[in-house]
Image 1 (cartoon, rainbow, N blue to C red):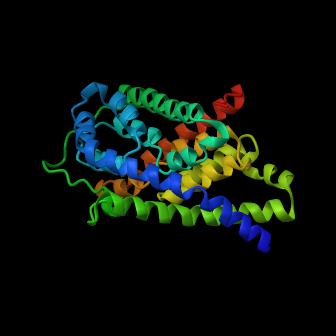
Image 2 (cartoon, rainbow, N blue to C red):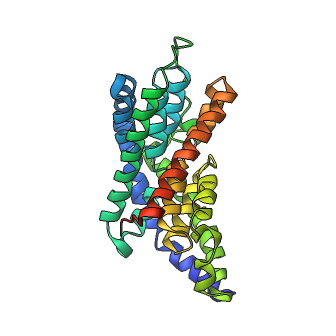
Length: 286
């Protein structure tokens, strides 16, 4: 057991510098471009899903939450909201970058591109079918970082980067410890035989994990994929369905709980359908 603990601590500790530098860059990007990104999405009109899909893939803290607030005020369409939700990367990007020495940067860019394309296509199709609703109020109260990022608590981007790094490292330590226990006592075959590595079942379960409105979901999904406990198709299903804290903000800002539930089901359905298609075609990025 001591060997398992030591391996977990050593493997996780080497990720800290990469995670911190990535979050520092993300926080800087957030402070420099967040308002412009939201304005582009807000003024996108019929091209909203295009802007939403592209900008959602950019690593910005709380962008999905901002999109949920804009949708609650009917400033953006449902298609644009879904495009942002599907393309947003949440905590996936920092973890993949910290492990880039294992498989390179190209696969990371491909994952972001696939998520953005799926979000854009789904967004345009939704807007073709569902007519946008009229604005319900004049002032949009965007609930963003207060639910998730600590970005406005003072201390600047350095403090936010440190908070993010510590929080995500705790999740990584927990997931890595559990995976190392499985590897130590039962072997790699057991890990690869988990339900999340099974066709169809893996996608259905991964989509449910992705819907958890917390950064922990994307941490778990990404780590399971990197350790071989989840197929690429299941991983993409979970990452597509994972909108981070955006779902929480949607339920807080949008009055219709029935509509919110429908949006969650739509997000889950698109994620699972895309994952099953990847499973059927054998699509992968590595």
